[in-house]
Length: 183
Image (cartoon, rainbow, N blue to C red; front, side, top):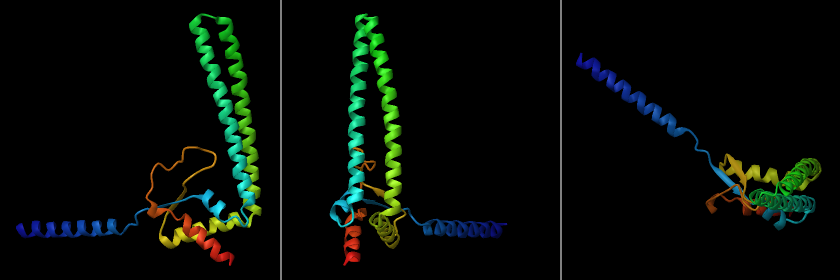
């Protein structure tokens, strides 16, 4: 009986070690970041269309932010009118809020459709964009990255990336590869 228990223990230990080896062999997801704006600005040869697109995105975002601020001010004025007991002014502010909010929604929907259309045309017709993404893919695959995230975005002050190690930034490698291919 003792011998059977010891054999079972040895088998269980071998199984556990095998499972640990398999788990250790699994690839750890590696993530890289890239600053597309820096690439576009550094490699200006064919990036005019993309820079124009980024500028339009930034302009639209500025307008959306401005309209958002107007809505916030109206909301504050409505709350103040309600506190003061001025129901007529509060109703007027509420009506204005509804109108501006609906306009903002329509503006965002329309401008997003324009940007989507422009991005589709740019991606289909602009060899530079295709070359950038091909180069990013090539470097990511060569260096074993599973995911590449755009570090900065022109349409947002806050980046989706909260922190990153400079060791995973492949921006300069992409720029150098693009310059090397151009020569």
